[in-house]
Length: 131
Image (cartoon, rainbow, N blue to C red; front, side, top):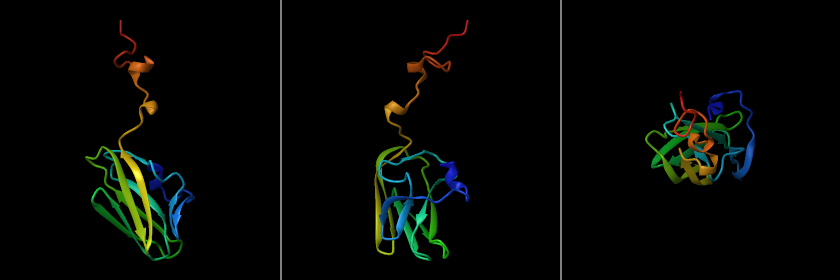
């Protein structure tokens, strides 16, 4: 996600698009967001040039205007003090809408966890004992 803050990241878009409102590849339903991201979790895409973009997440609204050259927009989602889900992210611009469903904050499925107790490494509970 930190890569999203870089301005030189290549803009590739996913098939999740309605009209000219688009999101980058890999951004869609079942999105996993980090909790307590500092300063925020960036979300970006493209829309018609100079068109207003509204993103609604957890009762807050984030706004941007697509730039006049390539139609790029970016907002920063606040995930402080938020964990769990599933949540939705509602993105709209010029009558077009994308709804991201099953968005989780700070939650990874159990098969993604690398728990020291299960692996026996890391020196945590169940890890190697000091002599």
